[in-house]
Image (cartoon, rainbow, N blue to C red; front, side, top):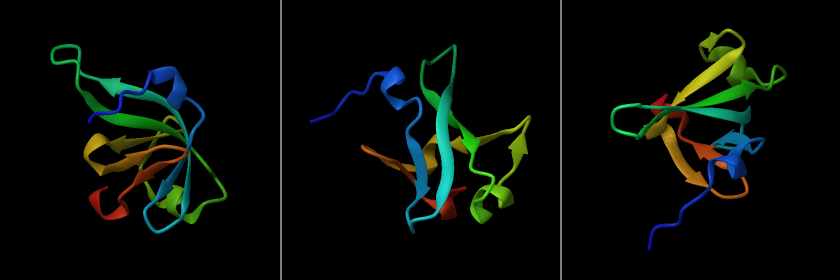
Length: 83
């Protein structure tokens, strides 16, 4: 059974890697206007995090490809190897 989540429920959720490192907080999603599918999650980085500092930051934000997202619940869990 598929669980649907409303976009505004995601805003502010903590984004962590599958090995427990804090990346930052979810702020938006990059959605294809043609297909309506999610291309990427846009995250406000935690500047104290070594992982966030290693990722490519565009205008103060990290773009995480949607295929790197493993789970969305209390946290958004991403696979660090897929990034």
